[in-house]
Image 1: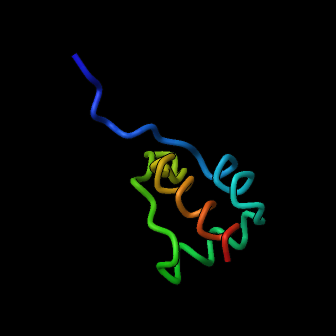
Image 2 (image 1 turned 120 degrees about the horizontal axis):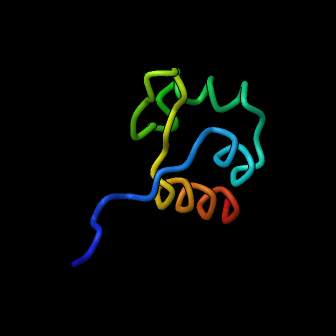
Image 3 (image 1 turned 45 degrees about the vertical axis):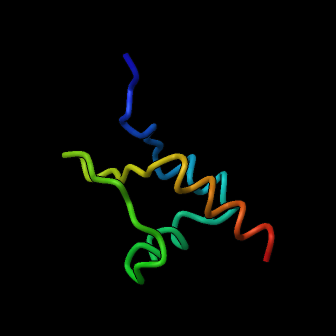
Length: 62
């Protein structure tokens, strides 16, 4: 049996992987430059780890 659900990571991990500040991440979400996978009832954003890894790769190639 395989698990097809994406691995989810939080905002802190996203900021670390993309080497950005939290305020930048919040702005990118508002500007639709980054798409969260969901949000917890506490208000914390969750992101697909593979999507963020691909974004990090594309940013490093630019």
